[in-house]
Length: 98
Image (cartoon, rainbow, N blue to C red; front, side):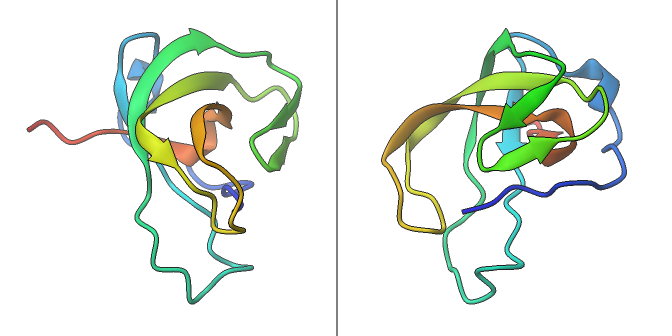
């Protein structure tokens, strides 16, 4: 499993914070045939600005959030189950309103 390294921030990305329901956009470049859906969860804490997020290095000073998944998540590489992960903000979108 990998997460997108870089992309344009999603609309409303500035609205991300603790308590926000999100969808983690998976990087399927290495796993183009993967059928797993992008996992959803809630941001439970702020991460560090530098370092590495789940399976993806963070370049520059990108925000990282700790996401608690709604259901245990298995990575595209077969790892898991993961209950939570540190995820770069560029890989997160606010979940659509139900």
